[in-house]
Image 1 (cartoon, each protein chain N blue to C red):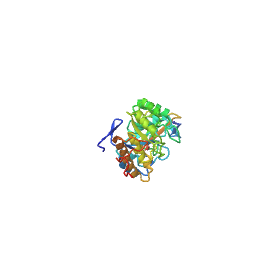
Image 2 (image 1 turned 180 degrees about the vertical axis):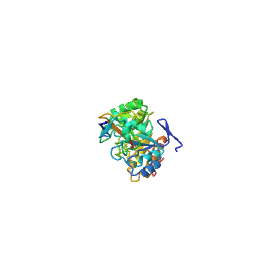
Image 3 (image 1 turned 90 degrees about the vertical axis):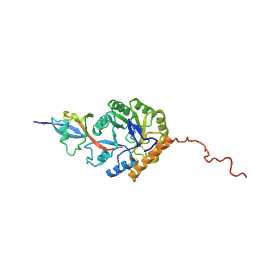
Image 4 (image 1 turned 60 degrees about the horizontal axis):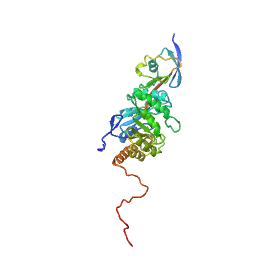
Length: 263
Length: 70
């Protein structure tokens, strides 16, 4: 526990960890279980799938997730319209027993970027229906403000396309979101590839980071989960400790005056 | 004499005897995970209404379960 910040509030719930973990793509349920433990996360995401579509074997992953002790955040991955997402959110609420929903409405099948118009429509309705909406959005400020206007207290802007591992493609846009929406809970979700990316997110002053592929697909997912946990803590500690401003020119750090040898 | 209707179940055509409720449909399925949520024609049907919600020909029934996700 960081004595400087014993906890932060996520939708009015006190949390210690600022590292949120996705649960897809792990090699085995046991590795997922160990990765969750190693990460220190207190919130994991999960999805919903049609029962009769493909694999119906109860393979143990969901049991691991449910028994992890972490809060569950179901998502509406795969939805293309607001209507689909709204229906899936209600189904998720019944299955998981939470009013929290990670709202995803895909606008492009290759980039998997959100459809900002459908996202706003869905967010508006789900807030009315009593959900705490965590919208997965782009880093566009105006679109983000529309989600705030719809009643969202939390935003999850992307760093880069889902699973791409590219890190923060547009730090300026993320800095702008932080500066223009100071009271909002901001969590970077998607595109994180390395612990250093997560540190960068936290140094920007974001409230948390959500990572899935970079951990699940790592050579050592458990080790990577631990690394990300440390990276998030380091970034947050750096942010609250006060980063120095970047300068174009050098500023000598060693307090010499003049030249050491006069010839 | 019972009659039959054709519905779509998770995208697949299925002939069922009528009358039939959503709860009866689920109860008659093999290997259905016991934790599913349901929708008919894109509208969520809460668990407590399944036993009273009858199915009509052409209905599209969706069952979803929890899976891993990011």
